[in-house]
Length: 309
Image (cartoon, rainbow, N blue to C red; front, side, top):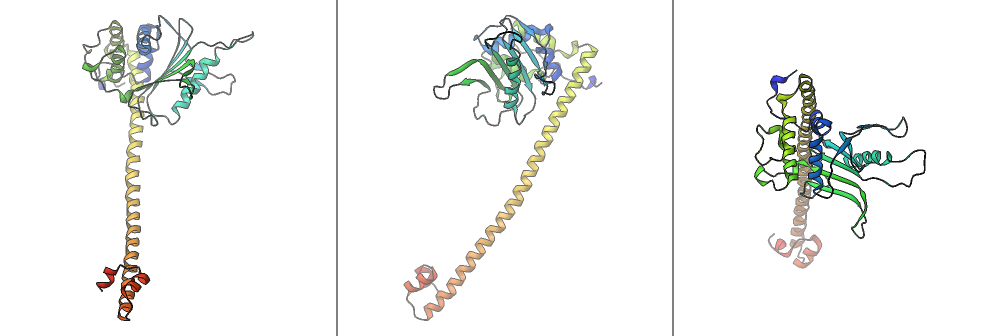
């Protein structure tokens, strides 16, 4: 164990252990409900949630397995799936859509007639990276099925919410809404040594109590340290790949620059050689008594260039 190496007061919510501890346990259900209500901002009010099995198999044994970070349903039976995505993934959007199929298909009633009525499904992605193909400076994106002609929502029972954490830059003094405060906590919790004065809501009492490392049992401390190690190793892998990519890009750019320089030099050399050859021909024609206009037509030189010979 490496507990002596821990200097933070609160857990890093980007680690698998901490995220599930804070948002995926009955003990801290109040924290999850508070976060979701702040996220939905009055569009719906969640009074209670029931945690569901986070490990799912397809309809056949050979189907791919899916493991969710947090999976629950509210008192209306609506399904809520939350993913903490720690690193960029090439097909992250595809994965989100794929994961959404599980809470949709699970609603099918087996063994009796079913009219296909579905409860709403929400997929929430908390991203520790910025989406490459999203140019908006906004950190929050709410996506639904939309009619591209009318720009109206076509189906309102499937919602994807993506939160790009690197794009959230508000300081404690700039926190206007309850959701701002949640974003601030998620992004900065591991760096805080004291609870910010702006976060006085009751739900944050529970969050800071649950997140304090000094209160962990020996088993939870060990589990957190292991999860933190995995998170740091993952970041190191990503950082190393980025640095190698930058170095390779610079090297390739230097080689390309040299190649382009050589090609340009050869091009300019050939052009200069052709020009000198044209000058020689023009001088000979001038000595032979041809007019300046005729020499210009033959050599392509300007009359001024020919007159200077």
